[in-house]
Image 1: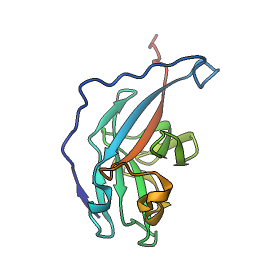
Image 2: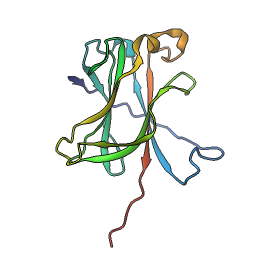
Image 3: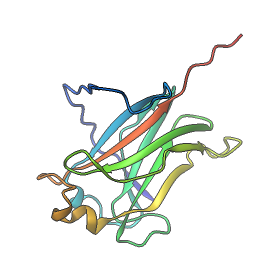
Length: 170
């Protein structure tokens, strides 16, 4: 598979404020990353051509999200595929969720929120990603009536990762 790395866009002022009771009542904390894929319709139309996000960090590990605008793996060409990669050395596990957002910030498609293993049980394949070949139909993302892309054709993908408590060695 071909992979492309976009330029890193760093907003100057991004603040998230919680009002009311946070979504988790079990004392869990979640780290949220919003990845913007600008001019989505013009991104690579080649099958198995992935667009990697900049790397991001959670729980002392590095990750990236790769979107295949015209499908990857076993999916038909009309599907968008999404994969999460652990890019630090060794194996890792993480509880996370991936969402495609509409213009109102509402998740229109999302993964289930559960713990997943990266790199295999013995860590022998650290670049092994976890993904969904048929995450969503490309035509639905491009359909103006679905209100997914903004006027610049930007696709917003949100990744939420559970922050694991740090354990102290005794």
